[in-house]
Image (tube, rainbow, N blue to C red):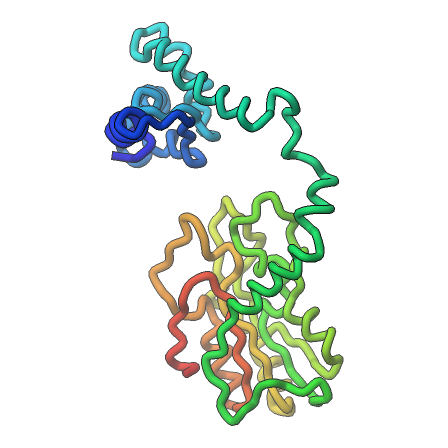
Length: 289
């Protein structure tokens, strides 16, 4: 039984046994999702099941907007049920002060001065830095020296300013992250960049499937040729940002697409490789190890 339509969880346990006075809001579209999940025959029945089960607010599915009035008139939903849901929602809005100022949490000036405060940006950078793991450092290849000559950077993700933001950033602007190339350029200009291969094809976003590049190796030759004379090669491989996250399961933990072949091709001509992985889940990189 989906939680959205589960009266035992929402009414019997949460609202009655635990005496919960707050409101219950569905996950994004989860009331409507009860239809393809086979729990409700259509959106109207989904609304019927959800509101009677104790879901006070329908997020995005529009089931309540479209069908609650009719369900009340048909006697399938009691007015008392609607009143209870409305009471819980209004109580929360009062507690949040939204009746005094409905825009109190939409202050652009606050966003600039508080959320983007230098201390907070520094803290975010510190967390991101500490999240990185150095798995192996054979022959003490790292750290690279700023004076090191002829560094070659390979990988579409090296120039990607969107993927580092991750998939759950709907309210964020695209292409605002600092790319690997931009970060590298702050320390040295002694590098050359070759894409080597795309990770994904076309535009990717939260709502649409990521189309992985499984065939295009047309830039392999350029990358391999450049690697022959490079002092060190930094290969930035892994997952495009929207490959991870909600509803983004995968049947394989290998490097997506043609990236494994690219890694092997470069490794045949240059063994001084720094492999940088960008990924939202563990990847099986046994060959690289």
